[in-house]
Image (cartoon, rainbow, N blue to C red; front, side, top):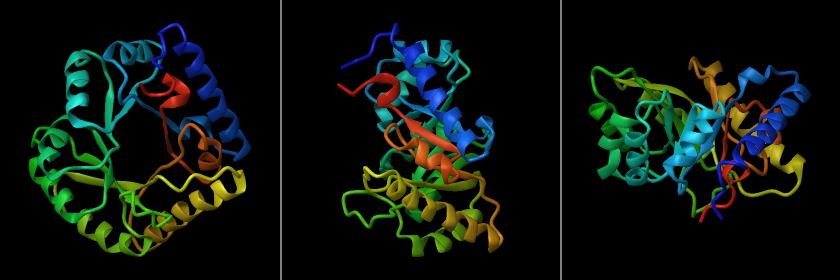
Length: 231
């Protein structure tokens, strides 16, 4: 069910409070965590209301839907993140309209994004998607594949490799959630120890953002807790 604008400020307040408490628990500044509002299937009017309530970062998974919202809200100072599966025939639209891409898992896609990023635009911030649970239905690299692709991406123009993203298997237990997120944090640390300069862990959603923040998440991708279930 779509949420009305009247629900949104309270939902945002609750999520921000969850982030604040989780950051405090892990002795981190709340400012070290970005709330990325996942607005796929939500109308532009609701995104506008979220912006009025103080949110600035918005995530989309479907290119055509996103382009309509980006155009409708172009006068707002919003940062758009692409978080879905990337089709090769959509890379130009992504390269031209988004500031971040979280879901790269193939060199070919990265090469297309680099070639199609406008020269006048700042470098496109990108993350490698890692498949922590070896789930066939989900995209992402196996952890062992990450170092090689990270090195290849670092050599591409107009892309800035920022870090790693994951959508781990659903876990009801908080300790199990934390173990999954710790895997991604440890992989990032190994890359940095080998000479990378990465600063982003895009992990944690509505049901598990606390566990992700406790393990170092810098971006949490939250949809349902803000906007309600998608229609």
